[in-house]
Image (tube, rainbow over all chains, first blue to last red; front, side, top):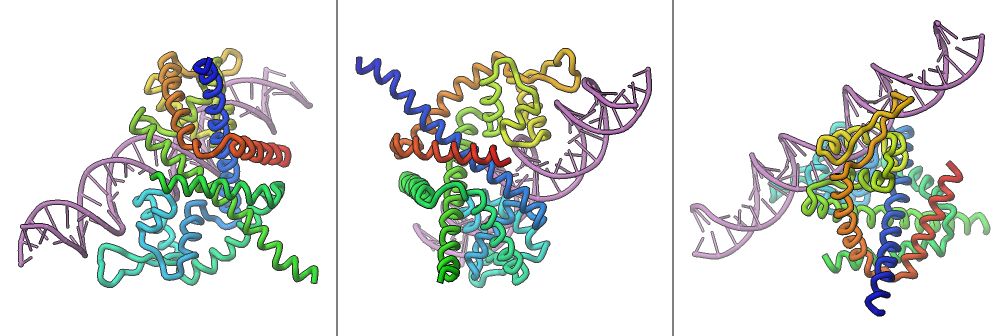
Length: 157
Length: 157
DNA sequence: CCTAGATATTTTAAGCTTGAAATAATTCAG
DNA sequence: CTGAATTATTTCAAGCTTAAAATATCTAGG
């Protein structure tokens, strides 16, 4: 009977975890869609640009292209294009780095910092409003589960 | 003093919720990246194609393009392209619908159903393996928080 | 019947994304 | 010192994605 129990129980657990994943994905897409829309209409920018600027905002001394792509979990070539456009718009500069001519350090311009800091404040408001229904304890616990999930991931990989 | 307390406490709460959002986003991107990679190497397909096929698999009688895009939370035009390629590969058919020549009903072909059902089983295994660290209770609670989050969303919107 | 508005879908242009190939520069074993 | 391997980035082709415009069809009011 053990085998039989396995046959019915294991799939059940599997479904539960699959369901969790589907819900994480759905919630994250819902919110992303809303943020994308708001960024577009209120700041005439995109989510990927916001993400890149957020990363650079945290590093006033700039980042290498490879640091950016690793941090944002996207490919190298992807970052190149986004940075190209941000440079064209005057929000970002590429600086040559003394001693290693392969790399360039990208960082926000003054204009970029000013623009992003305005955007970040509004963005935080949007997120707070969206998550207002989730109470503090739940938010904290949920965040901690996700955090440990990610730690395990990085330990395994 | 109440005002002063607000001034320090409210931002703190805000940060907590922002952090939660950032973590949801990160976990979902980590997993998506892994699934994309596995789908590519093991089934020579993509995540969007998988998503479309999953939706169609649940509806043997087929779906309208607009149902698909609403369900998947993506734009109309987006679905058109993915379906075009799935049709070209013989996984999906468009059927004219009697009585309304604007619409077409898309559904999986026999080949498509067979292919997807193999893929789905393996996919479920990947997700289970990934979420193995999260225990059942946590998974259930997390899923329920996300579910009610989404319900609230849909009620508000 | 006719046409104005609504509905379903496709097309388009611009930007995002990936993985792989190409370029360029650095490092290090011999 | 040299050249083979490594590292950092860009380029490329294909596919994904969106919002907006274009098509095509349907529905209803007059």
